[in-house]
Image (tube, rainbow, N blue to C red; front, side, top):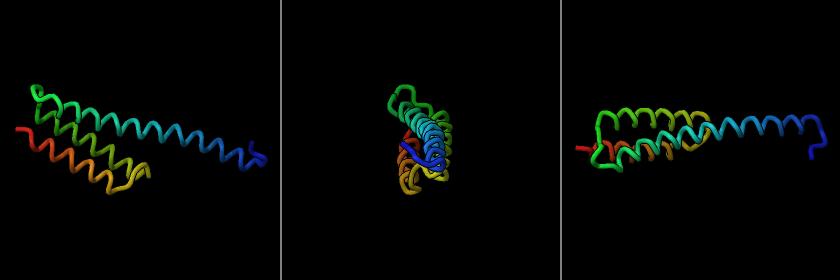
Length: 90
């Protein structure tokens, strides 16, 4: 239990920021999963839709980097691997 008012404020701030961070991580994962689902189903592969999903996923990943959610090299690696898979669509 916090014994100072500043410590109580830190607890409140941490709780608020945790909710914001969970929301951001969830958004990133959703975008990445969306494009991965597109790439896993070969009969429904639409290159234009996959490229649009890649742009959205890349935007969320880079936003996560700027907000401190993940390291920039991690995000770059994920974007690179997704782009490689999208490019392979005939």
